[in-house]
Image (spheres, rainbow, N blue to C red):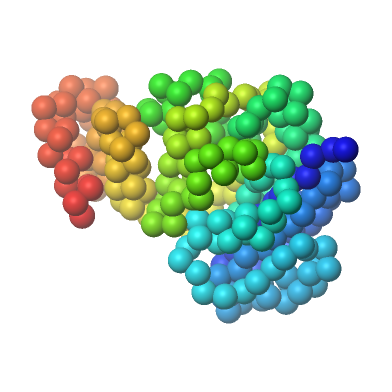
Length: 273
């Protein structure tokens, strides 16, 4: 018998894109043994009507206040205890095509991988591909420098989930990056050379509007798992604080040299804020 895949859709006031996300998952459901959990955080837009439109296709859904995206994902996984693998798809993202999930599940099975990831496109508000996520071959060392895994294109096994535990619900920006780091303490990841998920980029996304929070969380987890924060993170933090000043035009390589002696002060400032 084939493996069962659990797809969790965390959602909150994303009615503009939610139906596209759901349809993308349902297209994939034709080709794999799938259970779906839609976890809505108590949306006040048209999201509930959209969820109810497809509710017969879901194993579980709810709409209630939660502690954020990570909490919603944990709730969704707990609602799908029979699944062998898990993925989550944010309510403004989609899969590359209707065979995306089958491709990554089959690849993980063939390679006996507990964690598997693939390529990913950036898409705009209309769903048009506008670039590629900078995915790299797996290296635990390099994961401590940058997040080169695109979240919609990552699959992990129930065994891995049970080994490292739930996502950290205290994180709101780097919840996926921290989880990859935690998984990397126990497993080597396998990369499939196929496009799997698509990340939507637009002005209102968390990534676009909460850079300082992202840097703060990122620095904390880098110190926790790697004991240091790479200079490129320090430079990014400095530029974020000085984006309207002349110093923001200084080449990044030069800034790495200039800021090296004061890096601990910058890191401390971000972590303590």
